[in-house]
Length: 197
Ligand code: FES
Image 1 (tube, rainbow, N blue to C red):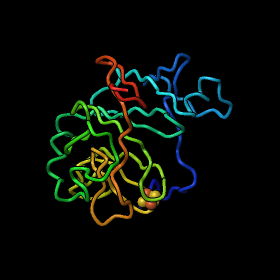
Image 2 (tube, rainbow, N blue to C red):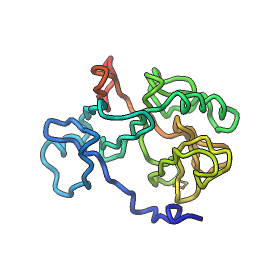
Image 3 (tube, rainbow, N blue to C red):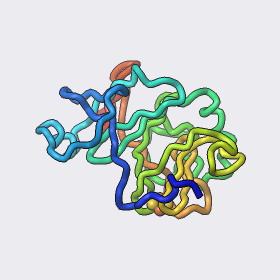
Image 4 (cartoon, rainbow, N blue to C red):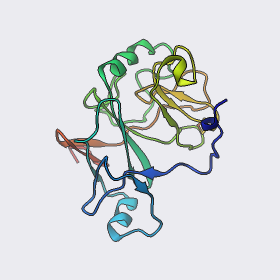
């Protein structure tokens, strides 16, 4: 077992690309979460939506932001990553996400508004650990020789695909949650609000 599988469940690795003043998160500013919150941070913790700039996110990369005190991941999926989703439909527990872990405009195995961008809450649906991204495929992943990329929860071993769908026979009962969100432009996402809201 690699060292990244021995993580204390109670200490989620909450390092976010935090929102700058004005509430726009960027890829370039990855700083630790700070204890003293500015008023705008308090408002966000209470539920205000978070605007995210995804213009610097490259294919295959993941951006972490915070919304309502929870980590939210935005993954820029490559075509290969998108193609991997259909291949695991028979291996995941709820392939079409019939259980309500997402807004009604999120459908299918891609679980996204745009196929290339996955937006999910990075909290395991078992006991609330934060899974680790495991985008390396095959033996290099240290998970399974046939691993197509996804997420691994170090607490009790749940695995999720690149849409945040949990694999069958794992402790986590549900897919990762997709938060309400919409595209304000091609490079900006508002997390925490639906377009119709
Ligand atoms: S908290 Fe993720 S598997 Fe238990």
